[in-house]
Structure formats: structure tokens, C-alpha cells
Image (cartoon, rainbow, N blue to C red; front, side, top):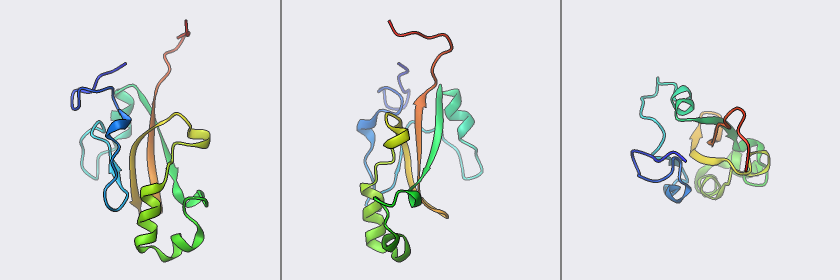
Length: 119
């Protein structure tokens, strides 16, 4: 287990996932950078792989009327959305945000060491 130098907790500890009033979140363990910085290689250097989940494909969380009308209902749905489910069950939430393409999340999980075995 890798301990964060920023939080002194395990990297991407989920107790730190607290959404803003608009339902967004940016984990303290994400590397620093500006809008031009590609953070993925930096996250991978931490020993994690990254997946992007788009909320527009989660019709249970974001019904068509919420996506088309936006506003308070959209941000309430964003705040209630759990992107770490289904094929991403067990991944850790690194970020939840409103993008140009609608609701999105970055999920991370530790990269399995080659040849690692349980036991």
C-alpha cells in the first residue's frame, strides 16, 4: 500500500471523497497541473491505471430530461452519481466533474504487479 505524501493516508483514500455543492470532486492525491497538463502519465507513475466514465451513458443516474434541462436537477444527479459500479466495481473515485461532453469521472485502481500472487 502506498501512502500519500499529501494526506498521510493510502493513495486515493475514499474517505476524502466529499462532493462540492455542484456534485463535483477532485481528489487531493491527483497530481498538480494546469489545464494543459496531461495528468494520466503522472497518475500511472503513482502506480495506478486510469479509466474515464461518462455519465451520459448511465441513464439511471442521468435520465434524458436531466441531461437536456440541466440546472439544479443535473447537479443533484452529479452529486448522487456513483461511477464506480458495474464494470468499474472496486475502482477508486479520483474525480467527478461536469465536462464539455457532460458528466464525467476519473477512476483509478492500483496496477497489478506482474507475477504477483495472492497468498
